[in-house]
Length: 493
Image (cartoon, rainbow, N blue to C red):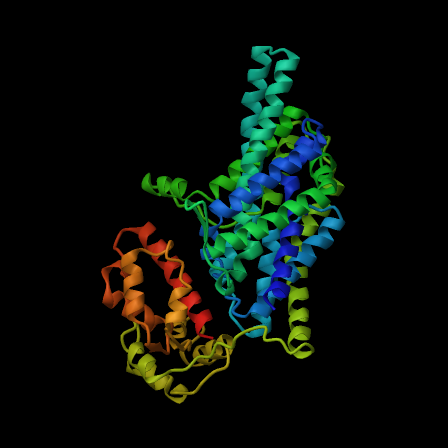
């Protein structure tokens, strides 16, 4: 069944290529500085390189918004996002694949009774506003000095033309790489925990992990979308909002690529933090919103007279419509997939105040004997999903009690046994030898709660313990724990 379920991810990849390729080469093609065929080839090659070489980091962070835990559910989430992007592409609107996948995941959360993390959702929605605004600022900041320099240097028109074409190609290649690295997790990330592939080594030097093989397939799907259906959206972005000169086209593509870099660079975020500035939220941003923001910035700098506000209004409305449409499509489709085709669209996640959790509550900050008394009637009562358990806690402790999220984290049931077969599925290139040695010593043990599994790892080796003041290590440790748990959990089912 995997190829059938995987087809929705490939469809989403095709939709992304058909829509988002316009963001990196739309202005170049529309201004006739780069031929569509040349743009499609360069975009396809660098998207695949970005997906395989730089996509793994984003995939390990996928799931903060909602943990899709069944293959059929992942299929429908990807299919709902793909259908939404496809319909918007047919309408020639440059929508965001990230918005579509976020909407579809929220639809899955609503259908399964899972809780949508408000902090993650608000952070993502904030970038939907900040991304086009920052891109417009970058474009304006670049346009003024570049236009001044060109005027001062008095370059020959042929020299200027050649420099502009190469600038567009280089900026487009960089933007394509960033597009593949940032967005491949949206296409294939939900399938990573259940991928049945194994490592493949070429010429005893190059090894592709199962994750990279998935990303390569997703990259091919994106490339197919670029070649077969991206030309129309490229023309909308490049000429539909405001007609751009070749120099303006170069500035727009460069500003767009810089925005993707800013929201993806861990090094830049660390540097800002080291000089006392706030960190940049490292979340996948919409390349569609970045390119449209840059085009508007250049248009406003020229007085705004050439901006086609009607087209811009249509694009803006599509940004609002996309996540809502994807959420509704996903919710309705999950109902039919589960009740008509008898497919398991989610693995129920139950909650219970087990004796182990009951003892742990006493150690939580702010907990007292009164806490146990308030929760006394919930003792060893099992709740079918996160929403019902959260409501029960809030009714007894108050909606704003800081104990509610802490108790929910401890009470989640996720029983599994570590087997040799499950350990063999772990990517040994991702974990260190010391980390793997500890995992292998746990073969045969069973766990009821995920947090207890983490505690055992920490008690067994310093390699799995958090380090005070080392934010990078601790973030990577969390990503490894999530990857490890997802892999062991999927293999034990």
